[in-house]
Length: 257
Image 1 (spheres, rainbow, N blue to C red):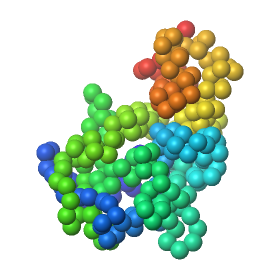
Image 2: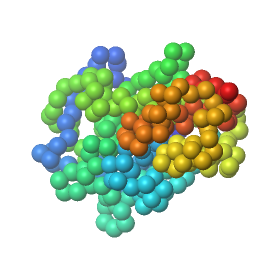
Image 3: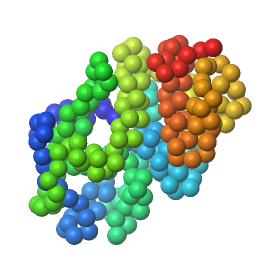
């Protein structure tokens, strides 16, 4: 997710031109291995929470309580969960071990991107993106490694589902930002429930008979209510459409009956 501060930070970094490559690898053979997994200010997106809490076998409410500090974006009022570092020397990530990341297969999108920064803005046909190289003094990953373009890095780090969901979330925030009015607290609480607590959102859908009020195909209904990773992804996608409908009275991906 982007803020004015993070946008300013990216603009200060060297930008990769289309087709330009960079050389980088991170593994236990690199002298600084695990050094970047500490003292982090790491925002969690709805998709990050979805993947992490399922990988850990936890309910979303339990996960947020155990691993996140809740803040909010001042310009939109949207929730901003920050991954809570452990107390003690170095303030390490709660998931890092001497052997590396214990949740590697479901690590957050920000971890997957490193050492790239991705700048985005809404465009006529989706999202336009630019890539920047983040070089920190302690990092030896650039000393030698695999040469890749940003697009090849995204493929290697399996970032496609993260980008698809996060870009849709960014679009919703951009729409709210354009109004000049942050979300009211009640709506912000609903965003937490519908986007960051997918298991609780399913309960809401069933108890409030949400499907009776919107046009949803039977196939999509079945996917949304399925208790699986694919089901969580479908439910989050629906939650984004639902929140757009709730906030603005209309949605690009959902219509009222």
